[in-house]
Image 1: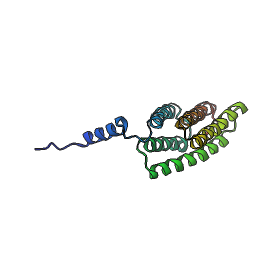
Image 2: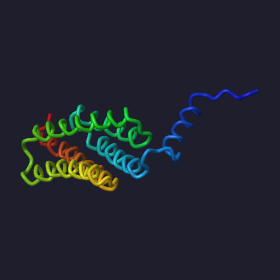
Image 3: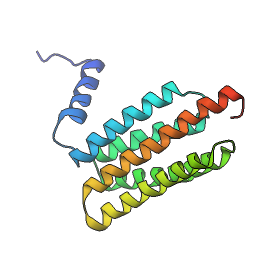
Image 4: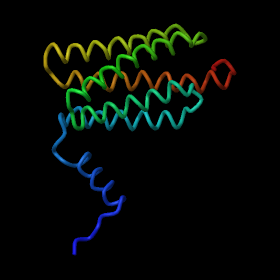
Length: 160
């Protein structure tokens, strides 16, 4: 008689397939999505004074990136690009709402956003996945800088 699997075993099996199988669309981008996703999660949990909409959207972006790079399809690719494009807008809105930061910090964060977009675009032109990977790291560092900024401004009572 076949043993009936419980929900925990099914979830464990699915996680094994997603994280350890070789069905990933692009191993390099999937691994960088995991690394950048973990760094985002650590910063979201550590610097939780940042507005909820911003932290929530970062989580959505991490999930979409993991799905797209882990088991790609045209639908997941489109979803990831829509979420990332929306994320650029939200990041610009977030940066515009931060009025008390030094000029150098604004240059670095805006520059990080532009640099990440540039690396992504260059990866498509050259068809070299390593530039796409670099764009993951640059945008992650930019987002982490923005999350850290919330901690200092909340301590001063300046952020909403």
